[in-house]
Image 1 (cartoon, helix red, strand yellow):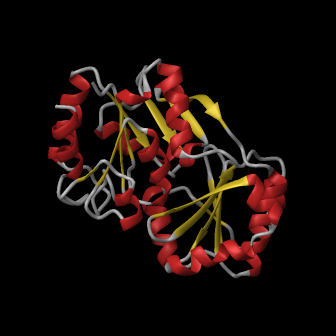
Image 2 (cartoon, rainbow, N blue to C red):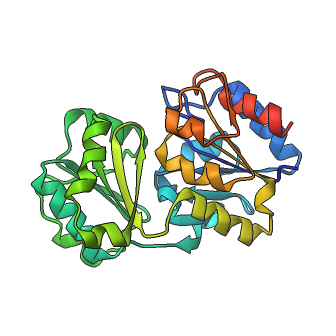
Amino acid sequence: MIQLVVCDLDETLLTSDKKITEKDNAAIQKARAKGVKFVCATGRGYSYIDDILMTLDVYHKENEYVISNNGAIITENKDNDELSFHKLSNTIAFQIIELGFRLKLCVQVFTSKDVYSFNTNEDEKKWLLMFKKDAILCKENNYDFLKDKEIVKVMYQYPDMNVLFSLKSKLNDEIKKNTTIAYSSNRYMEFTAVGISKGAALKELTTILNIPLKDTLAIGDNYNDISMIETAGIGTCVANANDDVKKACHYVSPFTHDENAVADILEKFVL
């Protein structure tokens, strides 16, 4: 019996206009009424999704949780209590940032509460400010101010995934050995500490909640979701997921994120 559902946000639970459909939310609330935990598992920072948590009626509530920054942080929603925090080595983070600058990429640096964006193009500026209105758009490629901050993720943005995939060949061995690399939203290459992923965070959360992994359900759409889809008792995805994600799933919904796919999955496996 499913006791915990972990669900990606962008292109999975959220529609193209970044909303939750009434049908999806109704299914989530029915699952919660049965005692099932519904946990957002996102690449975003936990402080960027207050509106989503409000819609789901879990904002600042005890015994409700968020997996953020691709698994680097697990928080309890009440007071944003950090139960698990895995930072990226600043030495490694700065190497990734410098390489991004040399390649003239948009580079984004995440702390637990803030995101700093360098070389931000107009398209990415709109995208970023849509979900993080107080994102910090840096005018110069100087990251000295980050030396005393705890960095949880560094991200490259580029609209062609094939270009992002090709960047692995440009990484030095130190970066490769000390990071986990994930891809999301068909525009991001993301670096977290080695061993960190949504799947690893799902394992941590089940330990915290004393829930067997076999009683968990994961829902996603992109490469950064594969680890939690493979880790969960049941791994699922929406119809708009890429083919590699679909191959990892027990079930692929015939519906997209704009067509209540989450409700379809919950009705099939939970309700």
